Length: 208
Image (cartoon, rainbow, N blue to C red; front, top):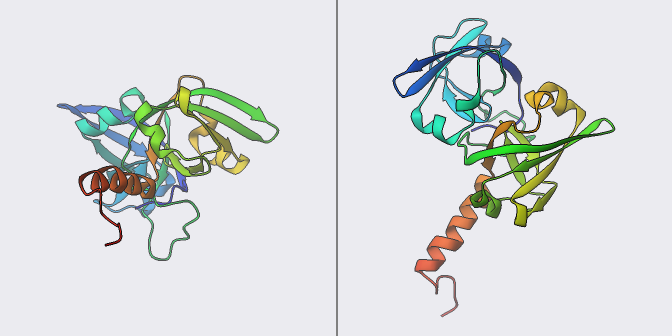
């Protein structure tokens, strides 16, 4: 479990094919805090750290992750958002993030507004049901608030504060950039309850 507050940026040094999967070597100052087998969020995807050194570690990307995430579009020397799992002592400054990507969005607009930046993202239609205005969303591992939604266009807009812009990979975004999207797990759970349990048990919760 993560909070969506990026702790460090990393660099993908190389990508090696593994049958239908892929193995990455990542350089980051966060590596000195990682032990082999630890979980780590890489652009919002929960992965297992392998062969750590004080400056580098590896991760293996499964075929399922390659299919569901933006990872198939990433190349060596690209920057990555990294976060270690939350602990009982962690400040929950963002929201609960599982590291389970729901889909891939595409950057449609990046606009500088004073010291802030506005970003518009095109989402898969199926994800819009989980995007309430002022709700939470995780974009490439960063906890953000949905500023506005345009349901007809399957788009959300986000306002990025200067601290987030400079401490994450967001400053490298341009039109067409693919980003990993994870909806708020609480919203997904509530939606699942109402659409599935009440569909099969329409009288659930009604008074006798």
